[in-house]
Image (cartoon, rainbow, N blue to C red; front, side, top):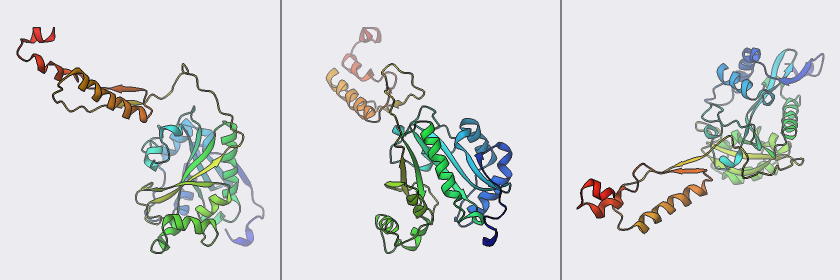
Amino acid sequence: MDNENKGEDLKIELRTLTKDDYLGLKSSMIEAYSEWEGASVWGEKHINKLIEIFPEGQICLVVNDAIAGCALSLIVDYELFGDNHTYAQITGNYSFSTHNEEGDVLYGIDFFVHPDFRGMRIGRRLYDARKEICERHNLRAIIAGGRIPEYKNYATQLTPKEYLAKVKGKEIHDPTLSFQLANDFHVRKILKGYLPGDTQSLEYASLLEWNNIYYNEQAKHINSKKSIVRLGLVQWQMRPFPSLESIVEQIEFFVDVISDYQSDFVVFPEFFNAPLMSAYNHLGPADAMR
């Protein structure tokens, strides 16, 4: 779109995506990702799945019937992932199985603006819409992993931390990070290996957060229903144990470790206590069992 035509006779609509939007969405994605080396676009089945599980979180801005920008989101129970996660993990390896309506964070999994419509505050409108979703669902924050595509030009001179500081100080303009900082996001952490294959960011990402000041934390009761249960599975190397105390010590070790991961249950291998029978090897099977 020519700059002189921007703002003239434009029909602008902010709305949720529909399955019928895919062809227009794909065309816009291809243009938006054209400067991203090795990028691929979402398939139709992925977009349809997002619309089915969380229609309100998939929003687009349409200008004269063309999709000018889009923001895709999930609700996640952030406690299950923490700050040290990858893009594949937070999206359930692109299956979106991590979406949880009882979660506490709106996680931004994608955002783009068609090059022809940049400079029209479309990105800000989409981000404002995301913030409204976050507030409406009483979620404590919006979190997203942000690429830093200009870092490749400074990697020999600056560490990622130094690069972020210069972007914050407006000494360097990064098209992704600068925009997010201007929209009241702050950097929680620098992630390494967040999105394998992102050569422009050298696989680094800024973990960004916007806090919902209206968030009202809900009390969690011990008998409340859980939609997700975390299991800790133990791989147990069979070896002799001289006493009951020694095997109990090993059990406590695994229980403590799995407890640190906030698991609900721990599952040990069948017959994990079989080594205790070694003291009765001189007896027949029936007597040893007794």
